[in-house]
Length: 282
Image (cartoon, rainbow, N blue to C red; front, side):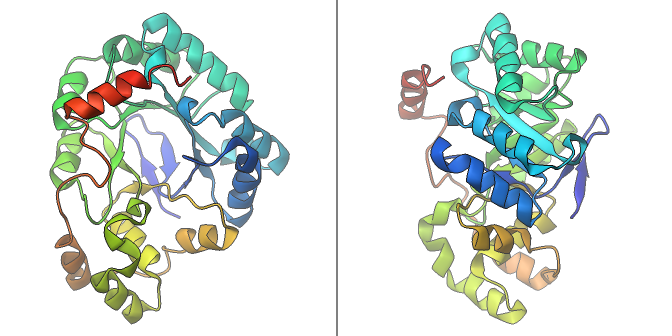
């Protein structure tokens, strides 16, 4: 599997397993399954309430810690300098590890500057190996990246064939930041799994629609973390490195871009109010 080298030289797998919306009751089993089929990057977050289960699965896996890449995220309820630092220590405790490979700010709301300074301090202290943000769109991203000591190394945003983030990706790259996709399969929205373009291209390669959609992102250098609770789908989602899409197919899929979210607009008043109501999740 390809690895992406971050601006500080740290390398991370380009494909990982995400545990968003995986319940604590299922999470330990799901992460164990993911590790068993070959995933070595696990993406969690304080707000997912399953860091401890991720930690248990890792502890029981028998896999050396240095072979794994752990990602977590600070939730907005912890967006002060002191609370963010304390929450990182709590994430370390729950994950059962001395360091987290990549720590992100989860949302661009509340006091993101104080929280990001805490990320920088945790990085300097060796508690995290890399830092970044999530859901920071170009305006928020440029503002933050231009005014911090250590620019974000990763920005995890909704990225899939219907919301391709082409211009946003270019802006990230100006700051030496890599794009990481959440929802690489759009959670099946907009009829992704029955899309005729993806179905026709999949037939050419003997691959599923999901594999074509993931390969398109992978081939563009996007870091992806598909989620499934079924081990067969985990294997399928990981098996996108043994073929390449032609330039013609890449361009055909590029035409599917709608240029907007399939979930919600982070810039809307409704989204801002929603996140303010979610401040107490952790």
